[in-house]
Length: 101
Image (cartoon, rainbow, N blue to C red; front, top):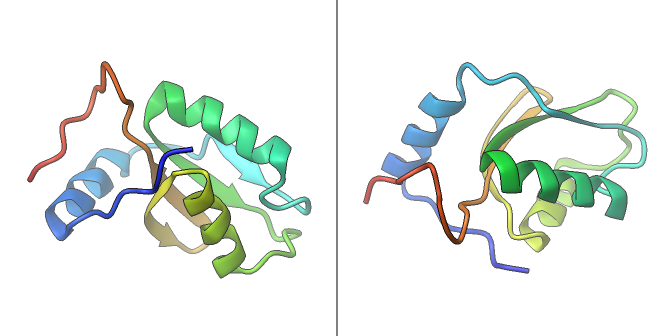
């Protein structure tokens, strides 16, 4: 797995602007960041690069456990608003997003 990126403020702001209109593609329930969920997340993020994830009320995992699972999968957390995470992983090739410097 690749390592999660470190975003500077300009990059984070740019990704937040792009994600503003997006609806959550995945929902994390009581199983939390399980291997199956991370597999689905990797598939979706490979296609879209920037997605939102809704954390359901029955998820028993803490914020730090969820964020650690994302980082372990090489996924960068852009922002967290309430129960919705915006995450990003740039494609190695043919990326649709060019981040500002």
